[in-house]
Each structure stands twice: as structure tokens, then as C-alpha cells.
Length: 516
Ligand code: TRP
Image (cartoon, rainbow, N blue to C red; front, side, top):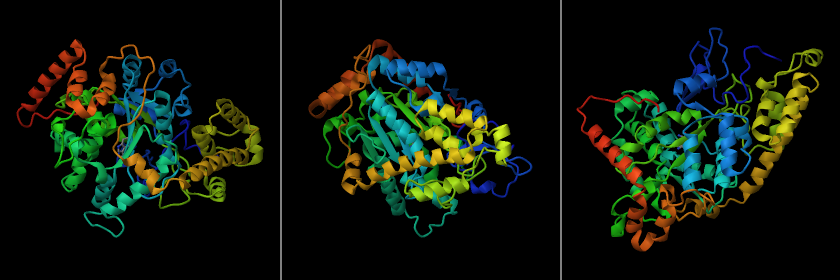
């Protein structure tokens, strides 16, 4: 059936129209780290997420054809399908990360996942697939943060302070381990990838960055960005600082061959955080609901003791739930999502029975009027997982003309997803605890970055030098390559002055987070 309510929203609508709109009261679209819900009209119809409106409201930039061309020129490689099809559709300072790579040779990638359950579904793989591709193209280090603490705090907050059975901190740590195995099975290179859970890793220089960052965010600012109130637990209020400083390479000295302070025994040169690492820029690929964290981050990079460049972001849409734009994808409803543990039979049944169709009521009508691929869930999934642009275009064309039927579209989708999931499961079987732990060990990562940067002596290249002299005179290496150019030193001085001024401001002179 073709339902008019789902308008011409291009591929990729909401995955998680959450239960709070089940009672179908009219409400505005709401997107933040704790809510993903499309607008509900006065008749109770859930609309597809309006991404143009999000671009406007969040003040992010749309990803343009120009960016794609530049990306391909800088990397010498074809852009990933998720980018070509604008499923990664917006950004902040993506150009700057391309500049840095072109000029100085490297940057760090950072993404993460909140382990809210032990099983991952298809939608969860999307940012990771894209990140993996970026890592391969740029040959750069990647950190993946598993926020077991965030999910624990959030769950307990939701349960009004009660701790129910099966949701203690250790349960979230278990979920994190299961999720890490899934992520590893997507094929990340262990030489350049560090994966950690907050409960296991946080401390050392990471914690110093956290503490400093916490001092830069007031309760009012956190409440404004995340909707916290007086009864929100203080763990959740403070959590955001951790997700923010996780973007700083200086939170992970080991990965760059430098010492991290994890007392009681530590070498004298580890007394201070490494300035050289502060100059390495970071790119975060993630779904757009995470953007409020990173808006707060970007506004404060320059105010750190060792200022970091403003973090760049590349932001994706959400993978549509099986039921379409108004559906709800949740782990507790097995028919709403395709899980990475589903059998070929389950995938087939779910798509055939539950995938929202953009086809017509009857065969006759479909042949005459044609279907609408833009709201068709089987087609939408193909747009995420089928790499061949030509075939995808052909499918859309033939669907619109009425030549291709809903059942045939679904069949093509089933075949592609079965292949993707089966290959995943093959690799997942091989991910033992030992394999997982290899990714989780803090260790010097191996990466080469841009083979021919224009200014190899620039700030991002600090990595190489820092890692060479690391053990014996890490501090000296850090000082040397942290100096940067004359202009950079001047800029850093100015930033420091500005930070001092800000720190001395009278109480109550709260700056509103502007979303830069
Ligand atoms: N808060 C995210 C979640 O609930 C997890 C996360 C941490 C993350 N750091 C990130 C996601 C960086 C994207 C990018 O899923």
C-alpha cells in the first residue's frame, strides 16, 4: 500500500520512534542523544524525520557534491556509498579535516556506541561501516568508546533511581563486550584501532582532560543541551564531559607511543599531559542525535590548557525501522529490526511480513501508477547496503514505472541482507575473548596517514616524532613537536589568554552554547 502520510523524504528515516509517542499525541520532532522521534500530527500520524529542518536547527552544514569531489581528490578514492547517497548528509568542518590531511598527513578518528543491550541490529552497523572505510582510505588511528557508564546511568535515571535486576554496572560492561565483538567482526584493522569501555579504561590523562572539561560546563549548559533537571542523577549530568574529551588524542598517549600516568608508579615525564598530542585534529563520524555533545565540545576545545583544534564531524541519518518512517525499531520488539544474529529465514520473514512498502494496493494499480521507492523500506535498506550505483538506480526507475513489484524489490533486499549478515556471522564466530582483548590493549598504533603531505613538519605530524623519542625522552619530543609554527604559537597564546579571561569571569556570566 502507498500511504500518503510518508512524504517524499529520501532514504533513511527514523529507526526509533520511541514509545513516548505511542499514545499518538501531536508533538514536534525531537532529536537529541536521548530521544529520536519524528513529528506527530494532530491525527496521530508519525512523520518521517525532517533532516533539512535538523540542519537548520542544529546549525550544521549540508554535505555537498563539492565535498565529495574534494574528498575523492584528496584520497584518490571513490567516496563510500553512504556518502555518495548522502546518508551521511551533514558535517561541521569536514573541509578542515581534509585540509589537515592534505597539509600535514594525519588525524584521529573517533566514534562510539552505547551498549544498551547485548545484541546489535543492522542500524547500529552503519556508522561503523562508514568509519572503517574512512580509516582504510586515510590510514589513520581510530578510537571506539563503549559507554557502559552512560547506559547504566541513563537506565537508572529512567527507572527513577531504582536499580532493577540485570542492569547493574557489570551488566552494561557485559553488553559492551558483546558489542565489541560485533564491532570487531565488521573487520577493523587491529594495528590501528583501539576499542575500550569507560569502566575499564578511564583514568590517567583521559581523566585529567575529563576533569578540566567538567570545569568548563555548567549545570545550566548541560541541562539546556540534554534536557536535564533537578532530579537527574549527577553521574548523567557529568557524563557528557567524558564523551567530549574522548575526542582528544591527548586522552590516549599510549596509542601514540607516549606515556600515560596511571599511578602509583610513573615516569617523571608523564607528569603533564602531552602537548604534542593536542595539535592532532579529530574527525567524528556519528548519527546526528549525538551532535549536541559535540557542539559543547567544539565550543571548548580552545579553552583547554593545551588547546585542541575544533573537532570535525560527519553526521548520518538514522536507518529506517522495518515498519517505515512511523515504525519503532527496538531490541524488545524482534519484528521491528533485523539483528546481526538473525538467520536467513528470519531475515526473509521480517522483510516479507513487516517491511513497509512503497508499492500500490493492487497489482493492477502498481503496474499502472508505479511505486514510490523513497518510502519503500526494502529499497531504503538496499540504498545502505547495495554498493552498485547502477543497479540501485535501475531498481528505483523500474519501481517507479511499475515494472518492478514490491515482492521483487523485497527479494533483492533479502538476498543482499542475507549475504551481509551471513558474512558478518562467519567473522563473528572467530572473535574470541583473546581477539577482542587485542583491540582493547592500550598500545602504540601503526598508521601512515597521507603518503605525500604538503607540509610534513606541521602540527598533525607531531605523532611521528612523538612516537620516536617516546620512551626515553617523550617529554622533549612532545615539547619539540608541540611548538608548531610561529602563527600557531601565536594563536595558541591568544587562546590561552582568552581562556584565562573566561575563567576569571564573574559568577553568573554564563555563556550560551552557540553551536558553532
Ligand atoms: N552516546 C553514544 C550512544 O549512546 C555512544 C558514543 C560515545 C558515541 N562516543 C561517541 C557515538 C562518539 C558516536 C560518536 O550510542
